[in-house]
Image (tube, one colour):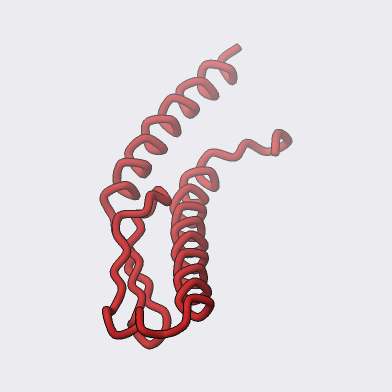
Length: 102
């Protein structure tokens, strides 16, 4: 059962590292822009949207253009936050894979 004890210790260590990375991701912000900077979206590494800024001149464009540009910026911000999270979490899981289990 010595192997089980070692596995449990590794799992506890991994859990602590995951919690730390989650805190770091929540504190990290990404800024995405679309429409030549007319739309700016800030999202944190945990995927929470922090802010949305629109250039007042851009609002003079038609509603379909404004809507699509905002949607594009939000999608890109979401994708980048997800990629960042997966990258950081992947670093942890790569350290703790046991042969034959995964």
